Length: 393
Image (cartoon, rainbow, N blue to C red; front, top):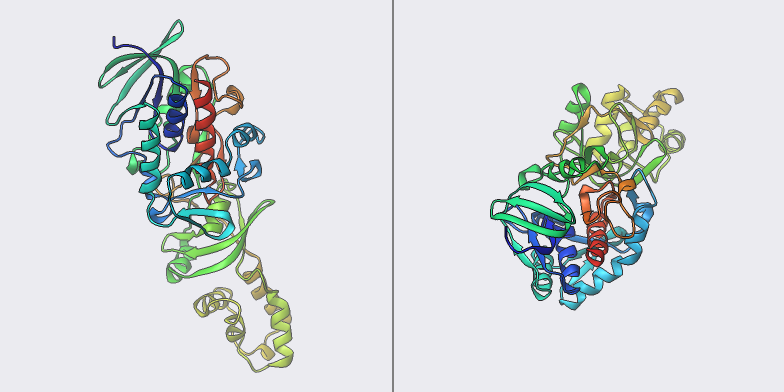
């Protein structure tokens, strides 16, 4: 048995690195391990390689969880402004895109380098390419059997992430550890993920592949108004990714393809002022021409406005402002940005991230049943939950 550590953190992603830094600053003897050869790969590939590292509008309402209040304590203890200050301390140039999203000007690697530098300065021992085979509890210590031998620690932090993007090493390890220690784990499903379709609707999407519009997309009482992208598999884009986290199999979504225009009012007005205008031409003033053609073909409505009864114009308007579609599914974890569900927050202390029934065992980041909206919120949850655990391990 090797000399025991104060803290062992499994998972060197955003949450694990933040936790290691904060624990190290407190003088804890910290060992950070990860099975991957590359550090924080999810950070590296995020934001098109520029890392959308937080959102200036981060607040509890931008997160999903069975317990909507759980995230409040961590987000208050370590805010988006705290992380922005860390980024500025390291001189990393960044910019705000729409809706409060902050990105590096140059590269996501800068965020990874910053975190590694901070962890080194805090005296953290970091060992990649380390597999943890098993975890056992004996009295007040956790014993880990790893590919590098057996180790003990007083505090064990699970920061292994979810199941999204398996090609970069996602596993069920964190959920399995939670279950081993009798913590409830909610069923997981892909979040922030494109929708797929079948039959004629799929063919329509394929024909429109690459076309994007600003759209409003609803599922139940939840609505997001952002970009929508047609793909050869179905629908994607920010508005679709956002609503996917609220969608369940069998649900219908309602898409407004021209949220700034009342299509029926436009048709009726043009029918009076320009009765000879083709309805397809009228429609192409508020949506791209390819989409206008597709909508008219799908509804079987074409010709001059003067020749079309109002009932047909109403049908066409609904296809624009209230397009109802039922996805057959999603693209799954392969392209999902996050994993919904996970370790039940009722099993954890919101102030420390420690398991209530297992002293010394902590869960942070994506493995926990807290999932942010698209736009830097999930990274903020990683920083906040990692920070909080780091103060308490």
